[in-house]
Length: 192
Image 1 (tube, rainbow, N blue to C red):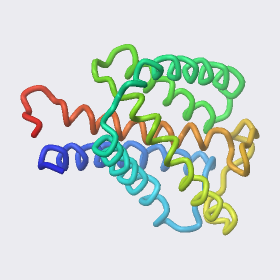
Image 2 (image 1 turned 180 degrees about the horizontal axis):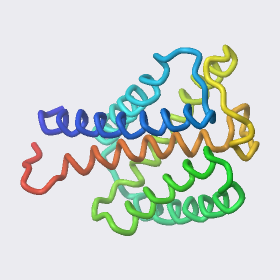
Image 3 (image 1 turned 30 degrees about the vertical axis):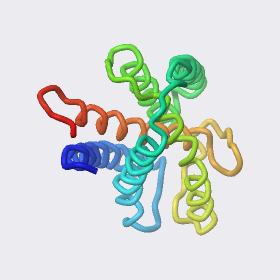
Image 4 (image 1 turned 90 degrees about the vertical axis):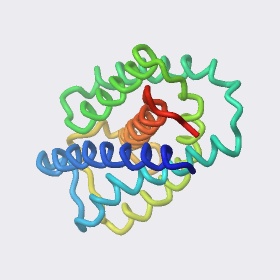
């Protein structure tokens, strides 16, 4: 990694960690989420995006081909539709509303307002990170370290994880990857 890539990663982590720490604070204050250990708040806000950016960069270095980018807009449009549908059914539930609105706004901005094209690479990274996400969440849930208020969710689960968890995880990763790409390709910078 060159110095510009490291700077981009650190700036992305700082922004992502701060924003999603605020979301976590909001969820805790609304009693949507509870942690048995305050250390988990920092892990979820800063470590998860760090792992995502590391894997994202590794995959891009190792497999630089981007031929499947043409299918990413279709995938994003399907996700935008799903966000609208789940917002329609869950707009009265804090966790559901915040999760799907945030993901909808990110996807819409990145696909329709942004000039950087990286969504195929993002989806590739997200799918691979679902495996450790599922394992870590299973451990945290089984030990009772993280609890979600059932009243603030749709009560739809894939495995033992609420549907919102997968999409909130996607929003965190997408936010981090977008800012990583933004800072790497910022006008006036030379990328080595």
